[in-house]
Length: 191
Image 1: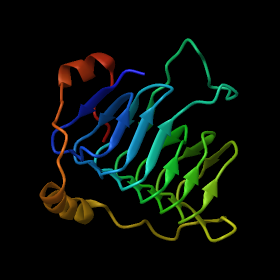
Image 2: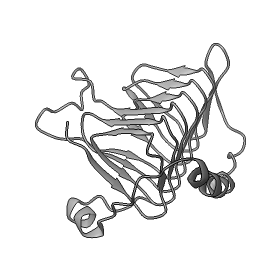
Image 3: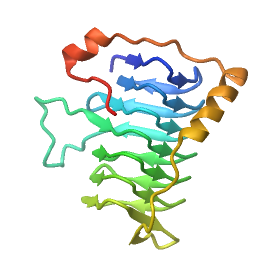
């Protein structure tokens, strides 16, 4: 697997993070040290203003048993804007929409599609072949599901704070922005 890491301007990606494969990290994203992103089945495009915390793992791996698996076609995992991947979560979802929260130690299996405004609670597991409806909340020891009453807070204050603190304590990867190449591939920044 060849590494092709594209880091947009104003993205803060710590050197100590583990990035493997074809990965695009959009403007405003924060990738903490010890975060892992693996693009195994195809490219990963991470939307604007996402936070990926320590020991969070994002893997793009389409199982050969899944109906969408095609060995002749390279699928792209597009992760929407403003997602928060908290400490120790593991996300292998087929699709991730916008403004979702994956709390500490949560797990999402490869057959799951996450829409928008969902919260996967701390330690909860979402498995099987399914698509979570918008505003879904998975919570509790038994991973109950309900609809959220209101939307969770935006990430902008956290991102602003992290942008001030991270460079003081960690080395950051250099921006590798090449807009012409992205336009040619049809992978322009997702809003």
